[in-house]
Image 1 (cartoon, one colour):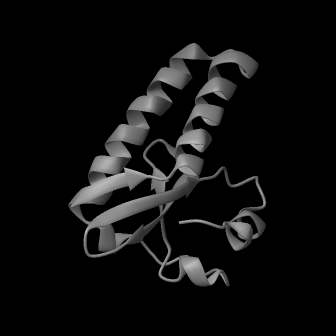
Image 2: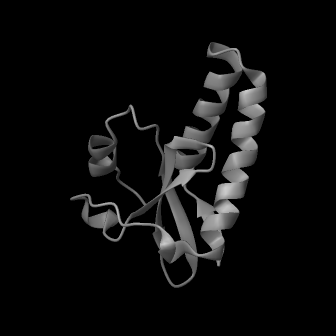
Length: 108
């Protein structure tokens, strides 16, 4: 099954990559993070329905699922599955107000 990343999820990846690279000054972690995102995407593609549901009140995100990035468990993928693809909506750090962010998520 094809996996697609919404712009917001791509922005999330870039934000986290830059954090590791510049703010935390751990470039080796930024490289490992990027590889882990790819590895996790492949794992989700293989068995997307293994991911647990993540309940939100946003009608556009009914049947949302979450799966942690391998090696970066505080940063899960939040995604939807439809007949044609897996759509990664966001990739959010657990310290953020995830419920609020997802409740306000507009376009999926």
